[in-house]
Length: 252
Image (cartoon, rainbow, N blue to C red; front, side):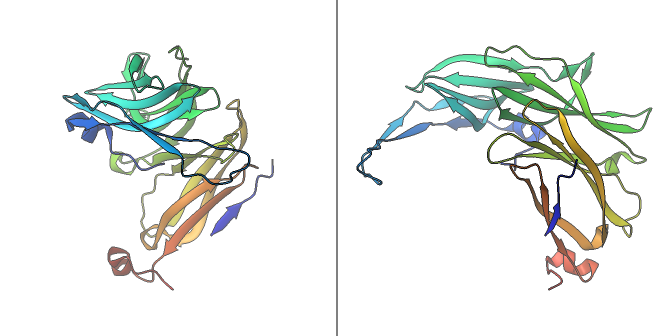
C-alpha cells in the first residue's frame, strides 16, 4: 500500500446500462430504540414502503437521510433525479439534476451527498483540443443547482485512452478526493494517476500527479481512500507477467 501524505460506494452501473433497466424497489427503515441503560436492544421496528415500478427507471442508492426525509438517487431514461421521501416512505418531491453545461451534455461520473449539498460530477471530452475534463456542480436541498466548475483537465491522443475519474469521501465527511487515471500511450510505461483533495468548502488542499515504478500492463489499482486529515492511500496489485494479470494471479 502506498501512502501519500498531505504536505501542503462506489461501484455503479454506467448510465447507458441504467437507461435500459426497468426496476422496482421497496424501501425499509429499521428504527432502533436505544436506551441509556441498554447498550444493546432487540426492540427493532421495520417499516416497509410500497413497491415502486417504473418503465426505464432505476433506483440507484440512498444518498442521505436528514431528519424525517430520505434522499434517493434514481435515473429515468436520460434524466438524473433526486427523489425525496418522508418518514412514512411516501414520495414527497423530486429534484431534477441537469447535466448540461453551455449547451454541451456532460458524461455522468457520479452524484454524492457532501456537507449540506449534493455534488454531481460530469466529464467532457473536447475532440478538437484532445482534452478530457472533469466538472462539478452542487445541488442544495431545495433543488437549486450551481454553475459547473472545472476540477481536472487531461490531454489525450486516443479517445479510448482518455483517462478516467473516480472519487472518495473521508469518514468524517470533511475531505473530498478525486482520483484520476492519466492517459497513457505505451502499456509498458509506468502507471500514472493523480489525486485532488478538497476541503468541506470544495477548496483545493493539495493536488499531485503520481508515477509508480510499475508498468501499466503489470499493475492494477484495487482501491483508494482519503482519510480525515486529507492523506491519500492506494492499494494495488503487481503481476509477474501479463498472463498472470488475465488469470488474476498476483506477484506474491
